[in-house]
Image (cartoon, rainbow, N blue to C red; front, top):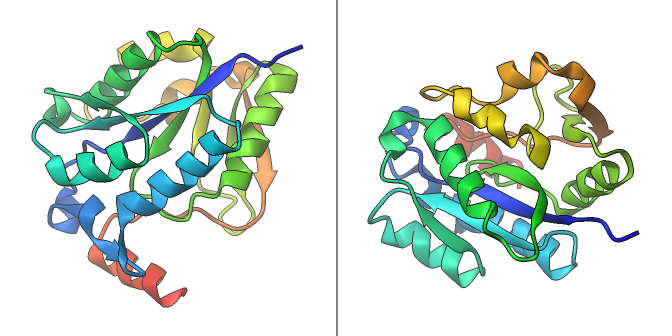
Length: 205
C-alpha cells in the first residue's frame, strides 16, 4: 500500500529577538542557518521521503526567500508573523492542504535547527506510515527535551487553530498522548536561540 504524501512545513518567519535579529541568515560553518535546514529537507524530497516542502516567511524577507526558493520550496508569506509561531504554523498548514498529491501529514520543521538530518526525517515518515500516529523524535543526547521536527498527521492539523503567540504544539500534543508517538533516535538536533548557541555549534565542527 502506498503511503500518503508527507510535506515539510518549514517555519522561518520568526523575528529572532533573542538572537538580535536576522537569525536565520547568520552563518554556521560558512552557510546561513536556513541553508543547512533547507538542504536537509531538500535531500529528503529528492530521496522520495517527502513529497515537497512549504516555507513560511515574513513579508519582504528576500534573503531567506532566495535560499528557500533555490532549494525548491513553495514560499508562503505570513503577514501575521509578528503574532508568533502559531500564526506561521497555521499559514503553512493551510498551504499544505492545497498540495497535490494530497497531504496525509506535515513534517513541521523549525528553521533554526541546522543539524536536522534526512535520516531522522525518513525514520519519522516510516513510523507514521506504519502506525498512522503523529510522531516526534527523542534524541539520545537530549532525552529530556521535546524533539523536532514533529510529523503531524492531518487529523491533528486543526489543533493549530488553538495556538496563540509563540506557543508551539507541545502543550496541545501532550493533551493527546494516545495520538502521538515518540521515536528514539541518536544524536541531537539543537536550536539556535542566541549568538552563544551559534558559537557552540560552530565549535562542534
